[in-house]
Length: 223
Image (cartoon, rainbow, N blue to C red; front, side, top):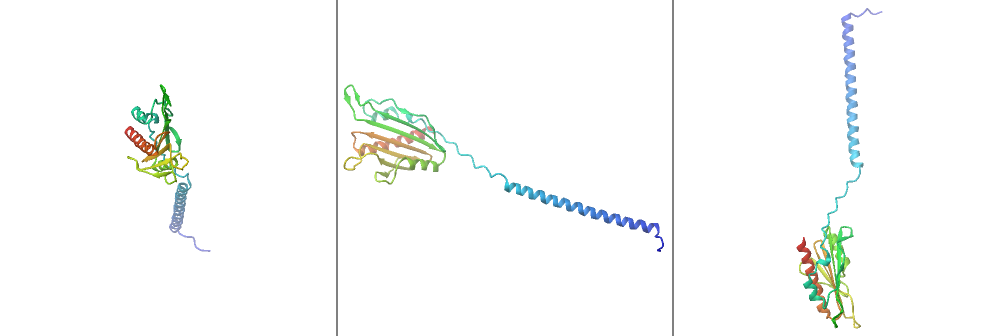
């Protein structure tokens, strides 16, 4: 049987054991904290990657064009519509597709005034404003053919692009009667349709082109 240890030696041994235990506990606590921090960080990263997809940017607002029935002056109408002009028929600007606002107006003449007869004439104006140039190009392409048998690209003052299309033909397959011109400037598209039963086609073409120029200018002045 070993001799009993002195009290001082036993106290030192106890202190050593206690210190060792404290070190082990401290290390364990530090490990738990570290693991918790990594889990927390991983959860945040995962949450960021698996969260809802970012919302698409808001669509640009569309600046509506003026009412189409206000885009031709009485003097302009009197110059291209013989006889008495009937009351115009049209609508206020309203959505016509995604990112588009359009307005349309038509005018026609009274074929007989005080016994005097006039050839039938019709004018139709459509103005469309888009929120981007890409949308405006699509509207333009859907408004008129540019490279068909009865159409061609033309130059219209103030327009980035313009095309002319004939809508009727005689027995010899020559264009007669009516022409429409579509013109685009940035995000605005204008379609000017002119029909005249007795005017040569070249004059109808010129009238439609000049009309598209005038309407584009009127819209530009309103912005």
